[in-house]
Image 1 (tube, rainbow, N blue to C red):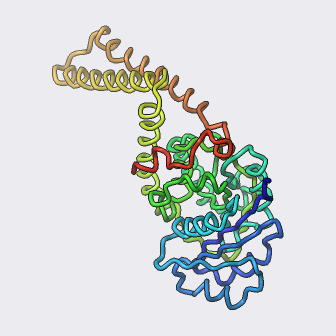
Image 2 (image 1 turned 60 degrees about the horizontal axis):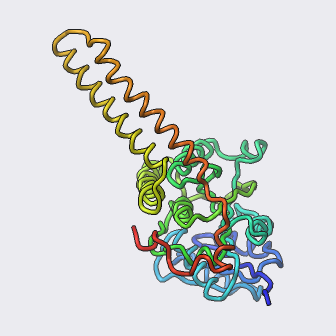
Image 3 (image 1 turned 45 degrees about the horizontal axis):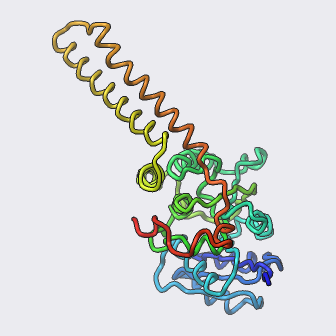
Length: 335
C-alpha cells in the first residue's frame, strides 16, 4: 500500500535567532518534520530553538564546524532522508521566504511533473521593483551564467534558496562534491542535470526588511564565473562525449575547430600584412572569414540543440518503476 507522502522542511541557521521562531510558527500542517540545522552558529541558534520551541515536529541538527548554507542544507537533507521523508523543502531561517508557500513548491513534485522546484522572484514585474537594484542586476548576470553551465535554459534566479526536492533524487546526488557555500544552489542545478532531473521555477515574492544578506553579489561574481566555466566544461563532456555522441557533438567540434582556424589564420595573415605594409588579397580574407562563418553556424546549431535538451522526463518516477536503480550515477565518481 502506498503511504501518504511526507514533507520535511530544512532550515539552515546562522545568525538568525531574531527571525527563526517567527519562521517556525508560520510553517503549516502539511509539513511532517522540521530540521533546524545549527551551522556552528555563534549565536547558538540550535540552543535557542530548543529553549523556546513547542512544536513537536522540530528537530535540531548541529554541524561540528561551519559548512556554509550548502553544507547545512545537505546535513538537513541527510537527516530527513534517513528518517524516510519523501519531499525535502529548504527554507532560509532569516524570514525572507514565506513558509506559507511550501505547498506550492511541493505540489509539482507530488504530482509527478518535477523532481526539483525552486523559487523565481522575477515572474511578477511589480515585485521586481522591490528588489535592491544591485541585487537585481547581479541576479540577471548570475542567471545567464547558470543557464549556460547547468543546461537548464528555462529557469531563472539560480541563487534563490527556496527549493524543494524529491528525496529519491536527493539520495542520488554526490553530497560530498556539491559546493557547500554560496555556490550551492547553482552547483545543485548542475548536479541535477547530470542525473537528468526535471527542474521547475515557482513564482514567489521576496521580503526585504531588516535581514542582512551575507551574499555580496559584487564579491562573488568572479568566483561564480570560474565555477560556472568549470561546470560548463564538465556538462558538455558528460552529455555530449562521455554518455552519448550525436549530431550536436559533431556540430560543436566542427564549430570550435573552424572558428579557431579562421581566427588563427586571420590574425596570422593580418600580422604578416601589417609587417609588410601590404593589403591582404580577397582570397586570403575569404579563407579567414569563411571558416569563421561556417563555425558560427555549427555553434548556433549546437546551441539550438542544447536549449532543447532540457530534461523533461521526471526522474523520481523512473526510480519508482525500477528502470533506474539506486546506485550513484556517473557524476558521483567524478569531480
